[in-house]
Image (cartoon, rainbow, N blue to C red; front, side, top):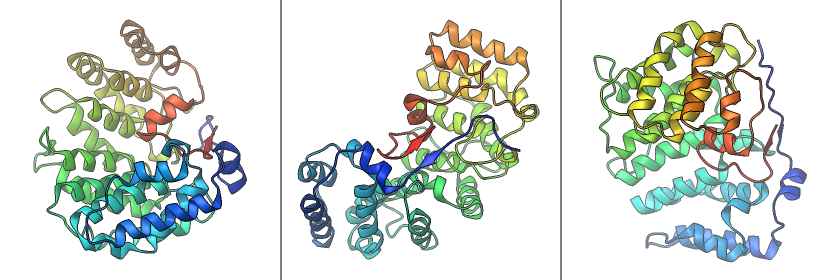
Length: 330
């Protein structure tokens, strides 16, 4: 079963170069030398991304897939740099994950992600360091779309053991950044069977306390009617999601209806054209009324009643950050 909304992934080198500013080979070589020197030094790497922007004379959001993947190749080829110190590992995970995101879309990405996956089994070198623990989860969230279903399941199941207590409730404290990143990582694993996603979503929506804005992103990814990469059988069925729908709207009101909550509601009630996934018309109209009342963007108000494609803003909201230039999803 496939979605009526189709995603066209164009990630070849020509597209990347057309979409992003050209970078001279000499500047790229300087940037690669800088990365090698920064990670080879005994002292902690400094503000690498800002320095790379200076060397390349363009903002990181403008780096093409070609540039990003050249950086990722260098870092993946020197995974031992992570072991020098906690600061080295935290920066390695952050920069490599940024350069390899979203795990697909450019020639050789399947190989790159397979190389990255070899790191999974050893875990972070400095597990007690908060930054390393957080960046480890960020790394896997960023490249989740490139992982195979079995790999996603492994990552999801390991996270779920820490996210839920013995009663099936959220075990993560509100100010636990590494725990929040673990939630975000788990939510990015779209290929996981729906019944396992439902357990996590129930723990969030049915729990006590207000949901923060980052938590609504997690709710959205777990309840998405139109996934980024998976088939319909990986989406929580409408019949299972429906009992949680009123509570989701109550939670949105309780939290002051932030933009992230409105986007999550629009995503959970979004029309896909697949009967087993789409919520009943009554609930979708309720969602529209709620979105209108709280001044959601016009396109979000249409999502529960029309089959519409994503734009740049919604794609950014779904991924959690900007997509690389040169990766076009239509």
